[in-house]
Structures are given as structure tokens and as C-alpha cells.
Length: 155
Image (cartoon, rainbow, N blue to C red; front, side, top):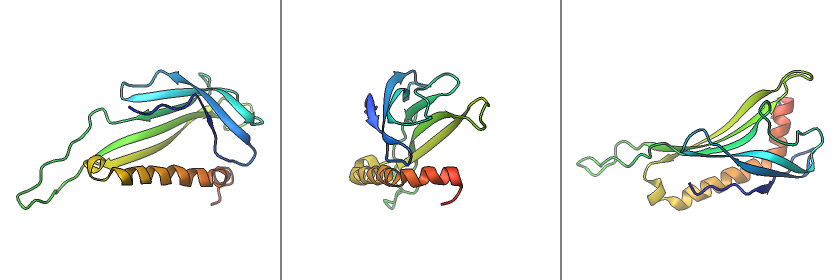
């Protein structure tokens, strides 16, 4: 995989955090088709945010690809491709969160799944890049509001 998370990266702008940065260290992934990092330090002003990942309160990032990549099926006699499969890539962030003050943390799994049409990697790579760019850009643009929505329950 060509994914390599920078050892230190900036967090998105979110209310209550000032210039958030995160330092990550390579971690043992769950399988050979994944890459994983854990947060080993934080920077900026992040009052009440835990410093780093721990066994009981993990903070990890895992990127995965399919264990077996699918290929295009052949076209029928009319030249039409009748069935197109997907190669699904995933991004998983695990974060331990405390449900009630004084209680043990529980792990939340935030997962993004990216099904890519088989063949689009060859026939339409520019639009795969544009889709990813716009996806990450939209999340970054709404990060503070989306976090607020998760806290208030209001969109």
C-alpha cells in the first residue's frame, strides 16, 4: 500500500482545540492487508484530551484494502459489461471514550468505507482522486460542526 501517515499531522479546525497536532507511531495492523498507527502524543492546546493511545483507551488509525483484489468480468456477446464488482477500501479510527465520568472507557469505531468499481482504477483514476479530495475536504470543512452535532444531537 502506498499509504504512509505522516509522523505528525495537523488536526482539522474544531471548536475548543487550538492548533491541534497528533504524533503517531507505526502499530501492528490486524492483518497483512492493513497499515496501522497509534497516537503517541498530541500538540497544541487540547484541554481534557488524553495525551496518547493506551490499551484501555485506544486511539488508532487503520487503513485496509481487500485481501483479494477483484478484476473485471468479461463482457457479454453484445459488448456490454453486465456485472461490475467493487474493491472496498476502509479507514478505521478506534478511540476510547468515557460514557460517564468515573466510568471505564469504551471503544468507538469510526469507519469509512470506499467501494471502488472494479476497472475504475484504470478507466477513471482522475475521478477517484477527485472523489477522495472532495470527501476529505468536505469532512475537514465541517469538522467543527460535525463534532458539535455529535455532542448536541442536532444537525
